[in-house]
Image (cartoon, rainbow, N blue to C red):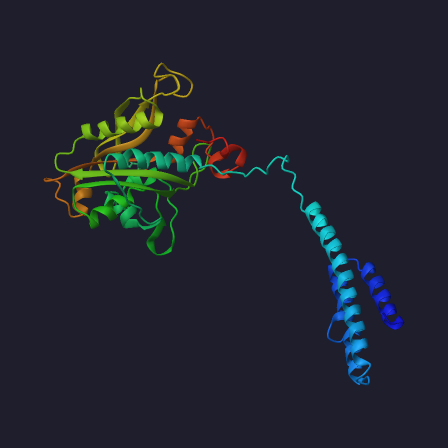
Amino acid sequence: MDKSLEEILQEAAEKFSAAGDSHALYEAKMAYLGKTGKVGALYKKLRELPESERPAFGAQINELRRAIEERVAVIEEMLHERELSDRLQSEQVDVTMPGRRRQQGTLHPVTRVKNMLIDVFAGMGFEVFEGPEIETDYYNFTALNTPADHPARDMQDTFYLANGLLLRTQTSAGQIRLMEQKKPPIKMLSPGRVFRSDDDATHSPMFHQMEGLVVDKNITLCDLQGMLDEFARVIFGKGSKTRLRPSYFPFTEPSVEVDVSCHACGGKGCSLCKGTGWIEVLGAGMVNRRVLENCGIDPDEYSGFAFGMGIERIAMLKYGINNIKLLTENDVRFLGQFKD
Ligand code: DAH
């Protein structure tokens, strides 16, 4: 090879060896073999030579090109291998490392109890109906046989809003809304939030209730107790019993308080049931004739029962929670204890 071409090859080989990575090598390669590279310039020069000198010089340039290509290929392969092993090294995964645990949430105890109640009563053919949280005085009180001057209004401290609206104090308001829309037979379950100006260890200004309503021909208190027995067994355990005590609610006649045998002592008497063996869990009764009439249902043809319970109260009894605030603070250390 001509001396000047030898020098080009020498210089190219040095540049290739100096290339630190494939990208630098490519740049170096292009400086020789690219369109405007040094080898290209030699081909241009070739065209300017007298015809007789061209074949010999052409063969020399071809030889130079092949020699350059060979060196590039060697270094290319070396760099490629090095880069691959660097990458494998840097992307190495230690399969023996412990995995990152995913935090899994749990259902809130109020949601759990609500779901259980819906399951029990849906199994007996009840359909779920949800009324509005902002109610009129009519649905929350008047239609439930509690007119403005009725002393029973004092049983619940109401949050009043403007324009005669209020935050519902009881899910019983849903009974009226449903009976206006639907005629018997009715089997309704109405879960929801209710609001009262009340605040201590067992009362919160916002809590949840579950209302039940059955209206059909020949419905009696026995039907109520039969269904509540089933509810008590599912929520508080197989051996649970219920008893009805006379009480008063404006929208039921007769009205009862329903007690469940104490699940902590089995009815013998303990601190939870204050030695009585019974725990009060809900209010209920036969739907007052006036309430049926207010909804256009003939009380001589149909009768019904209704019940209403506080979901927080049931959850507190079931899980042994002594302060209702625990259910609204939502401390995950507390909530995490309620797992399936
Ligand atoms: N609404 C009542 C309360 O909040 C609970 C209640 C009692 C609901 C008797 C009823 C019922 O449907 O029949 O205290």
